[in-house]
Length: 81
Image 1 (cartoon, one colour):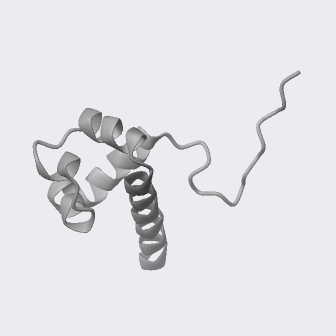
Image 2 (image 1 turned 135 degrees about the vertical axis):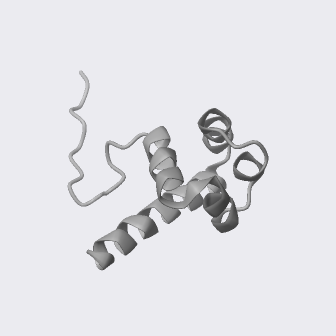
């Protein structure tokens, strides 16, 4: 018997894929801005969504930084509107 997925209404990352987060960050900051904020090779040298996904799925600390930057971007956008 499988459990129903828990609803997390206050978690802004709930239901988002890592790809969607990367695409939103690239749209908001561009690859150069993203590399400036999180200086990892997948953002600085020949950046692509595919290379970023591959790296971030294997590297928990980098994924945490990306998710944190995404949350910061959401707060910043909310504050501006």
